[in-house]
Image (cartoon, rainbow, N blue to C red; front, side, top):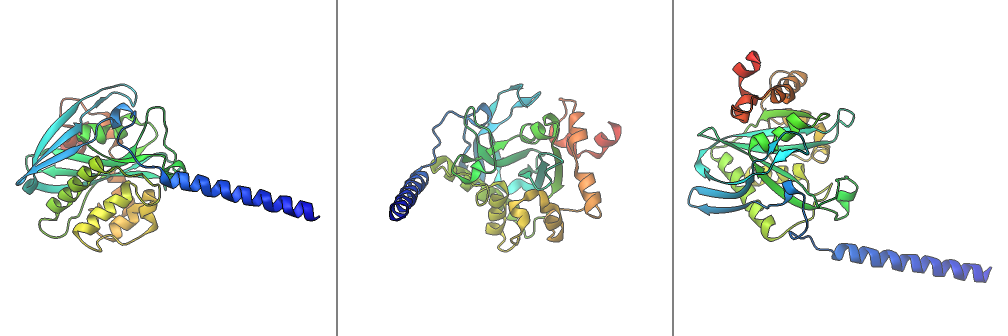
Length: 285
């Protein structure tokens, strides 16, 4: 009996030592911007600000025919920080069977009608696929993907068969907060280009970062809620806290914000952002 107890103690001790070694090794891992990335995550955006003008480099402008068939294009875009007039919120449900799982995006609209979207997401390495459990354990870096709406929104609303994509106009309280939100995003974009971070399914996601940006600009604007961790549950919270404009009750708002059908009918010559927002376009097509 004594020998059995001693063997058990040794086995438990070895298991603990191995566990401690693996944990130390895991937390010693450092995020990197230098890996073999998939094409659509290959370039990091960076920003140069001179006065009221911001030059955003490596804006993605892919022409997606399907999620695997596309023309690759990267552009540099200059915007006037004083001319942000609206902020739009995009909510993409990955699958009807998983209502709690969704991706969130912000898009900035300027006085000249141009729009730039920013998708905060996992930066995928070649050959890797995203899984939320892996996202807890330092498996993916975080990336701010700046892109045109026809790219960042269009690939979701036009090319992903199962997903459902909603577009809401954001409610921005306080004069100048549109600019402050954009500046907050641009600062973090440059920070990530210099100091990479791990994505974390719980603490460092698309939704948690959006909330952090909003509350940085307008402290306390977004209260903590389970919907921040599970953004598919966010519509009630968004409407209750006057974060997006409504079109009646929640069911009516969700129905009117769907853009998949109209996106699929895009004529490829009209501006994609105008197309998905145009009432005349919706009626005629």
